[in-house]
Image (cartoon, rainbow, N blue to C red; front, top):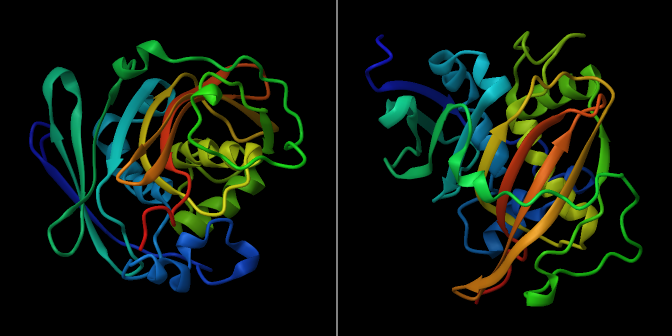
Length: 277
């Protein structure tokens, strides 16, 4: 099919171990907790849902997108296990493509754009003040909507990024053995990089539950699965909307050789129970 036409792919959503407390860092991925919030079932993690579009993006833009591409995406509706999600990419201005992920009712769950080069939205990116990894604060503070916290540097975290770690991630979150993201010369999957943002938030704060709402991403260099990667961040906004507390923060992912791999602006509701009757 021509790249000038809207293209379509489909995937059936899944979520492994959603009700296993030992593997559940965020209870919105559990049936009981999500149902208590009024959802129809456990929510699939936002980074995972968006990550299911990566094969379509690579088929459209090629592997150079992994090294010097960008993405922006917003979550409009939850995705539940068993949903057949329709993914479309439509050509946009300037060589970019509009992304839609549509649920079985024909409602957009995810909308966004992808393209090559720089993400213009991140022109005012605020880099972390430090990138030296350290343990989580003890005790971890609880996040709050407090203007004095804006601009604050967060404690950077280091995580294993070995081929073994990526292989386990691909099996759990994508049920895939895509050779680009498995094996001894594997790349770090874009959705794994995006997920570093929520992990960094939990490294710094005591988060009982959260809901990822939006991301701006720019990939800066080839990201190989080896050694450790370090993520640092800086809070850029805290506010309430419809009774729910939001945090926006910029974060940077750095590889073991000191190269910056990705930068992101991440938005999340940091208390999923806020505003719920």
